[in-house]
Image 1: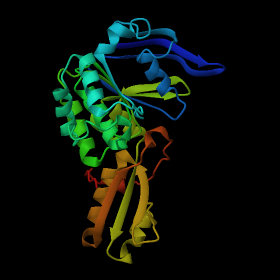
Image 2 (image 1 turned 45 degrees about the vertical axis):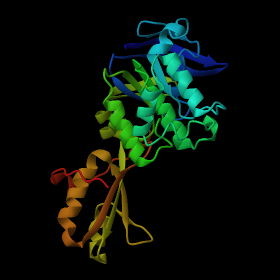
Image 3 (image 1 turned 135 degrees about the vertical axis):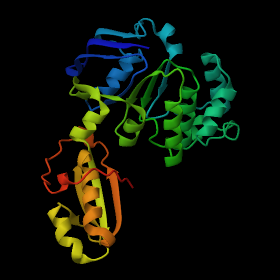
Image 4 (image 1 turned 30 degrees about the vertical axis):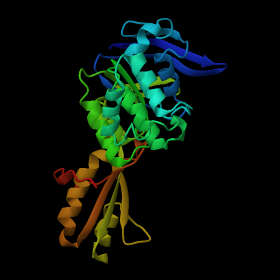
Length: 308
């Protein structure tokens, strides 16, 4: 499903939430919509779902989301960041959504089971009484089992446990035919696992649209933590920009594109003196300026990716 956004603007009183946004998402493409709070992400999503009017033109599968919403809705699935507090039971909700979608409760139950949610076991419970993780899993199961052509995900795994997140990623990747995917997220693991491209909004304007790998290389940051077996490594670690924590661990924030080279340098230099090393991404780091890091001696080492 092709998504076309042509010169879209939206005001809320004196506030211009979107300012001439122009971008297309190709049919079957997978794009992350990112930006600081207040950048216009939620407004754009609501426009694409037909919940808000706008200036400019929007077409989703050739249809106007606002005026042709009834035709478009059966082809779109949405997982919100915050689940609605519905009084209906899980079973009632599953039957209603299955009827609207022209599918079966069993299809949703299968998707939920893969996310470690037993639909039958919680069927009599009001949806609003479920834990945050359960509510998110159920909404994800509804979206993944709907056969949608346009899938909109807003922080879809925020309340899920680690194993369920991985299963969710696998399920999205396995969808056939692949829907056009728009993901709103600050989580590196979601962005890296689910999308190929990134659209970056700032103050209501589209400032970047391109491959996710390019954005991570330019702006991504990672935390590297090292535990040496003795104090003999202090000089080397300080020279590489590490700071010592109150414990025996050392800590440094580096560009994501540099972390593999740095890890290789540490492994080669510390050898048996290296007890442990942990590498993790900084959430929301793609939205922040990253200082340049001068490490000429690190750049001489071949890249080795190590993640903990």
